[in-house]
Image (cartoon, one colour):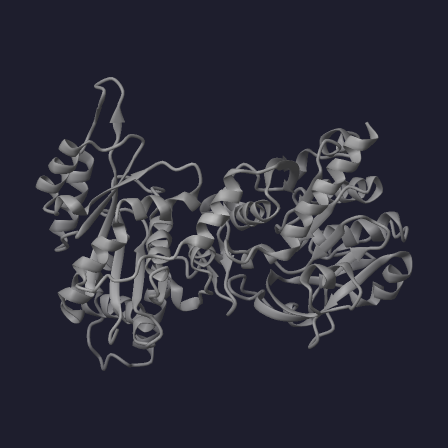
Length: 542
C-alpha cells in the first residue's frame, strides 16, 4: 500500500470499555492478513507521561525499549501484535502543550498568537502522522483516551476531524466504542446513551463509520437496526462486543463480527487473504484447557488495584498456557506480612513473586516474605524492588549485617547493599530520570538464568533508580547469593540467584514487559514449571 491508512478509536458513555483491547484486536486481525500495523494512544491528561502517576491513579506504567514511560494500553498492543512500541506510540496533552510552548519560546511561530486551533491541533496531527509517514506501516490505529464530551478530549477530537480532510476519505476511518446497558427492571437493552454519544461526535464534526457496542447480552436485529438508523451508520457496521472470558478471546469475537472486513471495505482495500490466526487459536486452546494448576502468591503494595501489575498478570497467563497450567494468583499486601504470620500466609503457595514498587511502605513485609521463601525452599521470583529485597534479606540474615538496607529506605544505613547510582545523586526532577528502557545483560554460563534463556546475551527493560552495591558483591557470592547477570557496560548486577535452592531468582529489570502471546517470557514459563514441581513434591510428601 502506497500510503498509510488512519483508523481512530474513540469511546463514549463511560470509560474502561476496552478501547485498548478493541484497538489491539483489530490490529491483530489486520496483521493476521499480512498488513503492517502499529497502534498509538493519545491520553488527554496534562502529565507529560504516566511516569510520576501513582499506580492507583492510572494502573501500571509500561516502559518501551526506547525508555518511554507510557500508558498500560501499550502493553496490550505489544502483547497482541508481538511488535515493540516506542515513545511515538503514546502522547499526552501535557507533551503536546509542552512541545508547543517550547516552540513558542524559541520563536518558531514568528510572533503569531498561539491558539488551540491551529497550533495545538497541528501538533497533535504531527504526532498522528509521524508513524504513518515512516513508510513502515499500512495502518496506524490511534486510540483517543477518555470519553467523547470530556473537556480534555476536545482538541484531539478536533484534530481527528481535520485529519479526514488532510488524508482523504479513503484513508480515514472512525470506530466509536460505546455501551448498550441492559436495564433489568425494564428487561431491555437501551440505545439512548449511544445515540447521545454519537450526537456529541457529530456536533464535533465527526461521523463514526463503525459502532462497536459493548454489552452483557446479544444485540437483537431490531436493536442493531435502531442504532444504525439513529446513529447514521450501515447496519453491517454495528458490531457487537460481548463480555469475554479472557481479553485474548476478543480478536476471535471480532473476527466473527467481521470487524476487519468492515474496515477494509470502508477503506476500499481488496480483502483477499483470510486471517492466519492458527497460533492464536493454539494459545487459546491451551489457555482454556489446562491439565494442571498452581497457586502463586503475589506480594506487593498496590494489590487493591490489579491493573498496577497488569504486565505481570498477563505474563503469568502466557506462561500458564505454555505449561498447560492454570495460574491462580492470590494478592497479598506486603504491609500485612510479619515475622509471626509469614509462614501461615505464604506456606500454602506453590511459588511466590515479590513485586516491583517504589518507596519504603510495605518493604519490610517483602523482606520477611523472601526470608521465608529462601528458608522453606519455595520457588521465589523477585522483580526490581523484589530482587533488591532478596539482596537486603540475604545481607541481614546470612551475612549478619543487621542494619543492611537500601538508601531508598534508610539514607543513614551503614551497609547500603542497594544504593543510588552515582549519576542519580544529582537528579532533582522525578519525571523521566530513572534508568529506563532496554539495556544489555550478560548471563554467566552454567547459571540457572542462562539455562532458562538458552543464551548468555540478552536485553531487558528497566525502570529504577537504585542498584546492587558492588562493594558487597564478593561477600554475597562467597555466602551463596550469586550475581549471574551483569550489565557489560557498567558492571551493574542485573540478576541474582541462590545456590542450592530449587528456584530463587531476582532480576533488576522487568521481564514481564517483554512477554507476549506468541513469545511468552522464559523466566515466567520456567517459574510456573518450578511451581508445578514444588507442588508435586509437596503432594508426594503428604
